[in-house]
Image (tube, rainbow, N blue to C red; front, top):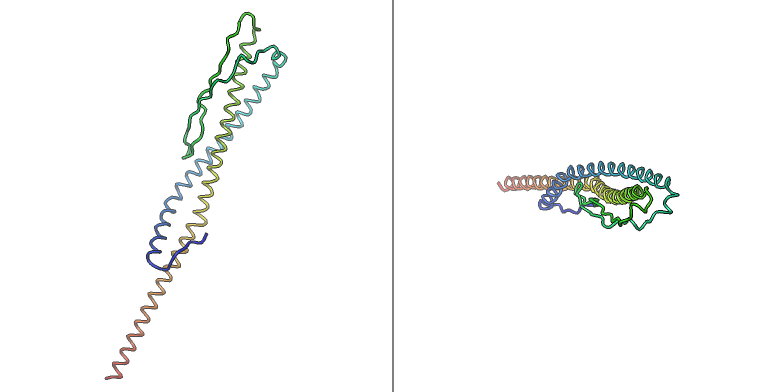
Length: 201
């Protein structure tokens, strides 16, 4: 990205202002990036834990597989999922607050004894699966934000700040050269005038 500038004081002041803004903003963006990086790492660990927990719960479910044929699956359903929003390093991510299950009444005398355990197992299974989905959604959002922030850090650090510094150097050199030329031309003019006066005298 080439920085457009003119060889004058106005351009010099504008570039200095732009450079100051970027130099001041860079540490903030770097902090945001490292916070997001840590949060992504934490979120990945959480996702792996949930995956393992879900796997264990599925195995427990499969252990009772023969009994599930007798189970009335319409007894339990997810009624509502309560969401919240949390800001992590300036990024809004969904937060799972609560899950409402609807359990239809059933006869404790006529139903097999293991129905209560079965309902509890299905409730845990559904809760873990929903929580896992939320964690993966959060991970995607955080990962995307971290990539964007890393790109911005690289843009500032490797492109814009050096570009502005280079442009400022060029303008300052040009202005110094111009000043030196004007001084030397004034000296030449002065010496010509002095020579004329001497010739006239």
